[in-house]
Length: 407
Image 1 (cartoon, one colour):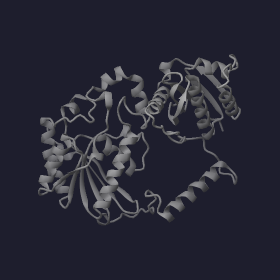
Image 2: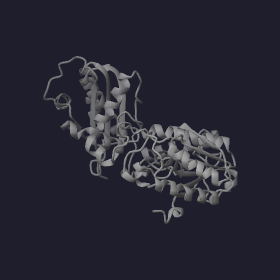
Image 3: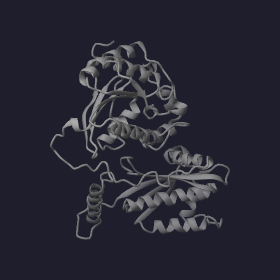
Image 4: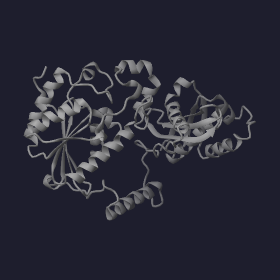
């Protein structure tokens, strides 16, 4: 079996040197570029160099958890790279314990190679570090670990009696059994190939709002309250008729508070016999911050590093914006409230592309790459059923047949 090699990109910094500080570290598959793990943390008041060492340590710890044998470390800190290679002395007493800790981690691998890279090639780790620094400056605490390292298609390990693979299998099996026994994990519904009766669950008819001018122009459209375009108004009339035929017994229509969703929801409510429209702030679109209203090309040109980091991790937010992790948290709250309020009923949910994608991702127990592979049309319809024991059935995704013929 070939030894596993990973690539670490690490960075750290402070606002003031010393000042509010934080670090970021990314572990990648060097062949595919796939992100295997991320680490980020606010560390209070510290110097740039202390934060850089902390980023290196976090990256090495993540690589060790991935059972890597060899590591290529890439940093834009000349000081850390040269000191870890033994070419520069460690004169500052505050750095010596950190260097010793890093050296202890290095000893756990068969080989570790250190390379200096320019800052523009370290954008992902830099973005993580800056987010942690922002949190430190605001007096908040960035999560100490953005996510536990996850293995993407790791080398297969034979499950010998005392192997790590068998130990992990026992751990997973025990955890699943405990979750089912205690009811602590809503996703641990009893597995079954047998179709479940939809009448015993809550059916959510998820509808993306109709088009706006921003949709047609390829612009980031988040919290800006943009009205439907003429094409969007035609779309929602067709969508309302389709929802009324698909779910004539729907008891409620719940909508994002933004105008483009409310107009879509009101058209659907009218087609259902004037159902009341209830607004839920947790269904609002992602806050794209500084990118709001800008075209995709403008953002790529103006914020290339930030865009790359955002696309690589759901925990990275656009400048002054909101991360998909934050959107997922509130979308999950909204779904939980709907299931609790409307057991054994059908509810129409009118929202935006990001919250609906995240709902479907979670319903399908998919990974984050699902978000970039799923396309949701304006005025498209998706349907999912949810049961109190955590069972989920996705009935349809992005139904758009009702939009045929709309120019």
